[in-house]
Length: 281
Image (tube, rainbow, N blue to C red; front, side, top):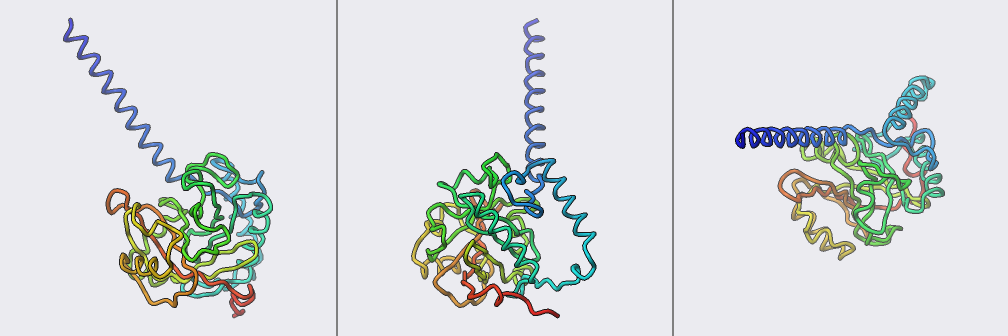
């Protein structure tokens, strides 16, 4: 009788453990497949949606783009190997920046890179934890929001800057995984950071894999030492003219516990948005 009771208890515990493992697996999969927040139609606080609302908004945006005049679709869009933007993309980002700046106090700018999923708002919180799991409007969101290290100056006046984002299967900084291929690294040379009053060109020069506890994360710090440290740890690197500002995108890597990938570039303020626009072809 006692053995029978023990057997039933063991079976029950095993069933509970199996259910927990299945739930955890489904939760992880759901997080990876969560659609990105949509900022295409409207960037007001009421329009920052999650879940099914975001999916519907993305679908509506896609249908609207498909119905646009043919001539709009023919506009040349520079690739990530060119230090240029199309006029429509520059105007689109500028409009988003101005609206988000007026609606969300933590918003600092918009990050964009052609030929990638990197096309997101950037915020800065009071720590490096909150926006790992919160949307721009402060609501809980598992994918989080790209954010500047809380110790850096929000106006990018420091020489060394780090922006954090999750390594997602699709979206956020997940594309950085693919840049650990020589051809992909070579093809992704430039990105853009728009703030409410400035436009910066990012010229990427290194992709490094380091520990999350590495001294490279102690920012702001000496510019030359940070540059040398990034190159020393780089898997891939190329020549770049160092200026007074550097920036790195940080995301998780799977090489070992607490491994991080740093995709680093030179941050150069542009004199005018017109200087960034690709000539019509």
